[in-house]
Amino acid sequence: MKNIEVEVRSLITKGEYKRLLEKLDKEAKFVDLIKEETVYLSFNNKKDLRLRRSEKETFLILKKGKIHDSFRQEFKIRFAREDFGKLEELLKALDYKAKVRWFRKRRVYLWNKIKVFLDDTKGYGFIIELEKIGKIGEAKKIYKNLKNKLKSLGIKITPKKVFNEKFEYYKNNWQKILNYENRKNN
Image 1: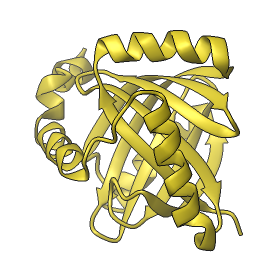
Image 2: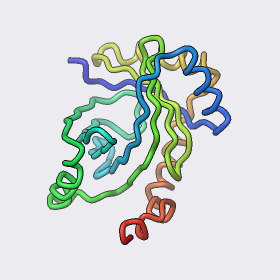
Image 3: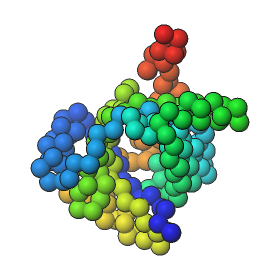
Image 4: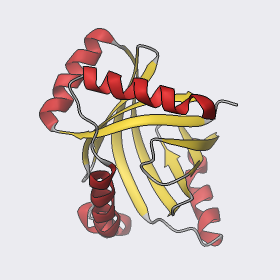
């Protein structure tokens, strides 16, 4: 079964984001521009549970393994977009509450049989992610290929330690960063 998500990612500057947009618009197939809200409901060293809504649909996503691991088993269930609120309420009733909330614009490309995501995440910054889904036995080979492809774009992989530190800061401050409490009450 192909349900191992293999990815490489890097934090990038606004200038790198613009450069990559230009390059991918020329060399890759543009797939979609997605505006997403993602709620992390639980995350630990073994799994994380997310609820994601775009303009078109809602997903409930479980990823096994540590956050920012290069490959993890992923389970994704699709729902109608309007089910987001009901699912969030159901999960709250099961004691899953929003631990982190993201708002991002994600540009999706297909480049050399690889999914490329260029993210502009409010209050967090710009990220490039290269992803391929495979079988567990293929994960290391896929990862090496993705790493080389990212390098060919002139981007170095951001160390996991840096991602983890940035995530910890965002996790502890997202409501303030997004002025979320005031948004909810308006």
